[in-house]
Length: 293
Image 1 (cartoon, rainbow, N blue to C red):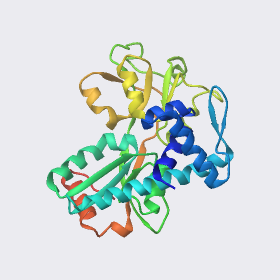
Image 2 (image 1 turned 90 degrees about the vertical axis):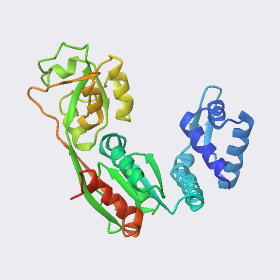
Image 3 (image 1 turned 180 degrees about the vertical axis):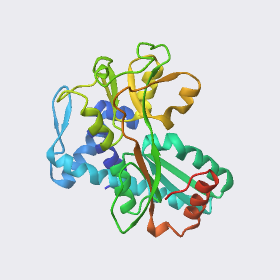
Image 4 (image 1 turned 60 degrees about the vertical axis):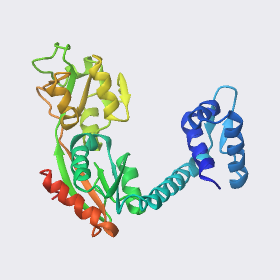
């Protein structure tokens, strides 16, 4: 079964629409339909239910989806590693949670690449759970997560403890002198998940089943909305230090309830820990002024 069929299946599951999937894949809609039919014939299950307005994934489709993602990723990574030898001596594959990458990791990568020009670096932004699974599957060299895994296959380091702050556009001066936990309920707060510990703290301030004005899965998207002058949001301070410095965003101090700090972790695949690219990476962290504990 070809990679393009599984990739089509994944995109249909995401878009819930055959025509939108065709647009993303740059193919005609009949090609999408034929690929899904071929996959359904192969697994002998209906993967989607269809009506005039939308497509819904079936229980069989939900079971297959994570395996399809893994198949596509493994094939892409295999092709990438095979091609590296034509131009580079080594490779380093990093996966990181979005907020950690925007903070320290991106600058360390730049430092690393300036020194080690014969190492091809590949980076993907993923959720912590997916990163850990990919490390366990030997598909990633280094991962940065907010979850500390417990596995003999992985070497885990404390990376950095990060401060979470409330920010808004510089024009929002209503709470310039600070805001109480009670007042948070009245400001149209935007939400972005920043780890389980923070989520527990935040939801303790709100009534049961509270719905936030805007809910984003990635903090970087939230930051762009805040810069446009809309709403307030909790973010990692390291992720907005440039916006704070340029005064695009301002910090609103919390008067009576401080959010918990967030611990991040650097995780290394033990099978690769003695390889030159990993040794170079650990040296780069020290050179940039950061080392894991």
